[in-house]
Image (tube, rainbow, N blue to C red; front, side, top):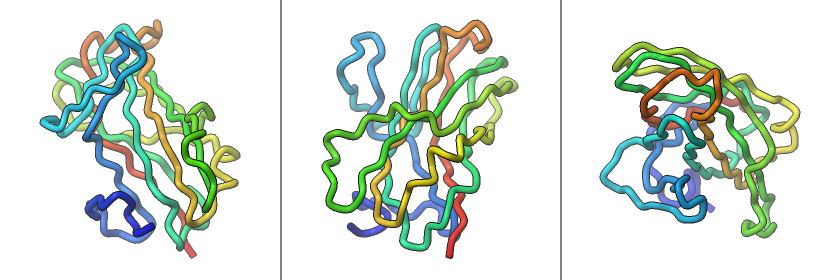
Length: 170
C-alpha cells in the first residue's frame, strides 16, 4: 500500500510527522449506528453533552521506530474545557481489517481553550498501547470527546481539524 494510504495528500512533509486531517465523515451519536457524510466541512463538529467521534486511518511508515507525541488541532466559538481520549487498533500485513475495533486507549487529554482560538494540544500517550506497532501495520484511530462528562465545561461545539502523530524514525 502506498504511503500515505488511500491517496491522501502529504499535508505534513516533515519526516517523523503524520498529519491526519478531519474530513469525510463523522459518527452520528444520536443514532449510534450510522456515518453521516459531510464533505463540505474541513473539520468535525463534536457537540456538547454527548460522546462525539472523529475517525482516522493510516499506515505505519517504513521508517517508524516508536511514537513520540500525539497532538490534536481544535477550536470552539466558546471558552471552556474538554475531556477527550484516543482509542485505536491495528492490523498487521495480511491481517483482516474488518475486525479492527478502536477500543484500546492510546492517549487522553483534559484541556482548556479560549474563544475562537486555534488550539494545538498534546494528548498524554499510553505508551504500552503503541509498542506493538510495526512498519506496514494499518492503524485505526478514534478521537472521542466525552461531552457529557462533568469536567467537560465547554458548553458548545468543539471543531476538530485533525491529529498530528509525531514519531521517532530510523
